[in-house]
Image (cartoon, rainbow, N blue to C red; front, top):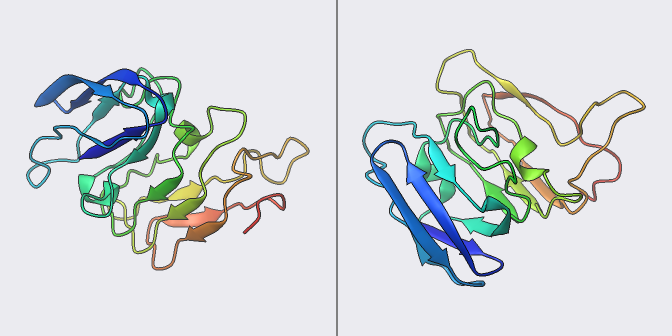
Length: 176
């Protein structure tokens, strides 16, 4: 699967217990990483270090939504993304993913002062466990005086046909 970084970086990328390697990710160049056999088993736990430099996971030929992702997390306990998160990603295209966990959140994309996310696509999605659902939390602390967002560059969102998103909070300062 292609991974693109906004600066030269060495990243440790692991997928489940089957694939683990170090990759040199040059500036703005797709680097193809081994993600194992994504057609069997799963969903998988990914571990990515130096993730704050990554601007794209997947592409139109190998989309992220084909990777059977249940959550994208930044905590060490969940062992997915290092604590720096994925603040440089421009597009979150998870349409048609049927493996979401009810614990899914966008926290990993808001680790910088402003998120670079411009497009979010969760069309025709579902949770792996029937009846599970989650809020798509564009705004943190909605309905309070503490309400805020880091998704101020977001211009497009699609949740049509989603069976797992039960609510979405979109603040007024998001230019949708």
